[in-house]
Length: 270
Image 1: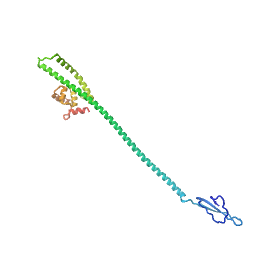
Image 2: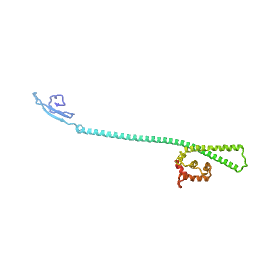
Image 3: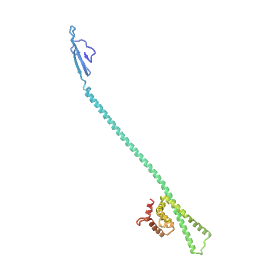
Image 4: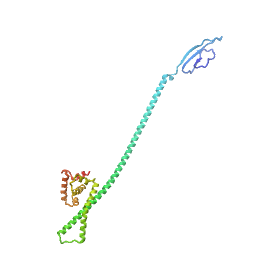
């Protein structure tokens, strides 16, 4: 009887051996007894047996299995983490690229807006310059007309015998009346000029309070880079008079000799 495996004693037999196969690992007790022909049974003899497990079921093997399992899971975790980090890095690069493209679009939009604003400002500036040129030309024409009137009056003064028709007198009177509007036209010119040139006349008048109206006009015409001949027509003086006025203006503005008057006035409004 193999305790731990058999459920009952085997039948009596003359064989003096017993075979067991496929025993599970563990501790067993092998019990054996004999019987004579007369039916007298011997005492039970006991043998304790220990069946060792195969090497792949030993504690060492299980320890190795656990270590291998933990190692495998750790390596698997590292692999997944590496894949995750690569995907995250790729995603961040894509996001940065998208942000860069978005920034480029914003900058492009801003540049387009700035360009449109500049175009609008250029158009407005061109319009103001056109108005300014129109007023300046009108002033020149008035100056030429007044010069002709003065010449005509001078001629009459030199030739007392000459006579003018009533229509000629009316024309001269109407022309002379228009001279009263010169100050108003100059005010209009100054307003347009300051709008185009960033309050140049107002600022220079504030800084140099001793400038006369004629000198302010000279500053404006010089700032427009008009030649002496055109300035002479505007101010109704000779070209020589313009040069003298420029010299006096330099003294009032306290400009050094090596400094160009036009460049000084240009930098003053910038």
